[in-house]
Length: 210
Image (cartoon, rainbow, N blue to C red; front, top):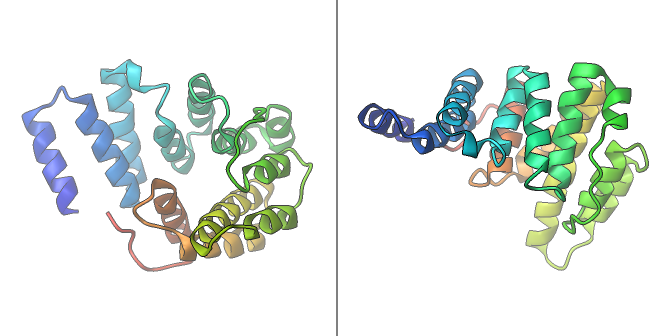
């Protein structure tokens, strides 16, 4: 909250700074202030259109704001600069599923073949209807050390939770989002996403770390 106050003061002093708007947008998202976050993201890309292709953080905020068509378009644009990112394909699926239904989302799933992070291959296959939740979890459990395993299991639970949200299996959604929140690193942006999601579902009560 203090950082937001400082950023707001900086924006008053430099109202033409798209970068400051982008920074405050990300901070407001971490604080769970989705509508304010989206307003800042939108203003940032309006002021500096060059920010749009890279702005996957805006796409995630649009998903939580319920602007699914805009979120889908953001992830389509991001794919032009980051074509081998399973997470981008997953968020595109999530927005499309809420906008047009799961069948259409699966038909429009962005193909990713060279994301070597574990368990991204299995997550891609899950969203494509070619793998199960157990496949994702089994892949995530294989790691060289505890830190890698924790990170992999975090992403496995986060995207399983999001997948089950899109497909309407809400009990499984809650279980996996709760686990993702337990494993989340609040200093990592995706960790903050898991914590914000868990808070919105009232699965945790601890505030996110700004």
